View (cartoon, rainbow over the protein chains, first blue to last red):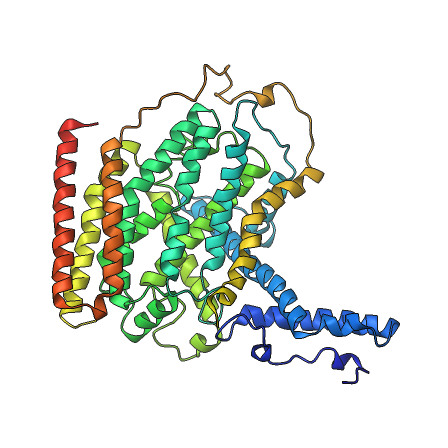
Length: 390
Length: 120
């Protein structure tokens, strides 16, 4: 092949014709990153070839393996950035809506207050690093990284549409819920490792909270799997598209799952592990500066994941039941994000409306209210299933 | 496509997800100040001198609930396996599963009733 002009280096081939293509079906973020690398790598290869004609590096830069490798690296950044911005928008939404609920305006400066999140991030970035002498350094740092790491990982694993995913698992819902439920364990260990009384109580409360909401959530996931016949997120969404959104037959489950998901992401009124009015900052008391900022960000990642789970399981995921504008074909990702932000909006209203539950109430709420409701929900769905409605 | 190849994107995304926090923390060392004082290194207890250690025997009051939780978590796992396989199961399998689940529910109800009086 003769390389004379720049267009010989940048030729945008069909992404699926690459023999190292790592997916079975078309994947949009990978396609975007593939084309980005074609542009970037092709330009670099062309420049090198101008200086040193006929060198092997240029052809190496645009061969199938190398393009695939760099495309994967850009793919990881694309996936992360989209989730990151979606989370920042939900953070901004919380500030604005919570401000309105309290009869004030919320953040105002910079893109209607959106840049306040960025400014806060920068501020925590420049804070001094403090670490008390008496903490157990291993658990102190490792649990922090793992809490944030698993939160970011599950946020990245949520598929935004049939074409925007990382891996199309047949057990997607289950894997995400399993990783989601790991955080209270790390919080418990961290609360012990910090050697602070508030942290210890906060960690114990995180475990207590987990004990009360985890079983109802598992039963409701089983109910959704019973209705859709699969744990695959794409299958669940398509099953809802073919019948009705599941919040209509499972209205009991929807409301219960909404509360349980709020508890799972440790947001008010279920943030008894943090409880800044009684426990200083709960299990985060000894984390200062950048570490605290990262924990806050991780919290919002978990809130985003909880809302995304509700969207997937009850609100039809990325598909609309009827779309005259063909949004389902062109912009399913946007539909998904808007639904997620709507669920987050409801969570903010819940936060503004209800006072924090007491730690001795949460177990009774979990086992004597949520649990029977989830079993009732399962019974209703089983009835519908036996009756042949679904 | 083999299973391992299809999980490569997850591994790549996992690198940034799990490395994000340590990386951000490490990167901030170049611009953050460093002026350690004695007060920064003490355990925080609302401004007063900390009293004793926090590595104490802690009485958490939900012991009974923790035991019920461990048992019922397993039951919920069985329930999930049954739910996802429901389409290919016989009627008898469903009946057995519901019997098992109903018995577990009865047990939990009894345990919760008992917990109110025993209160461990």
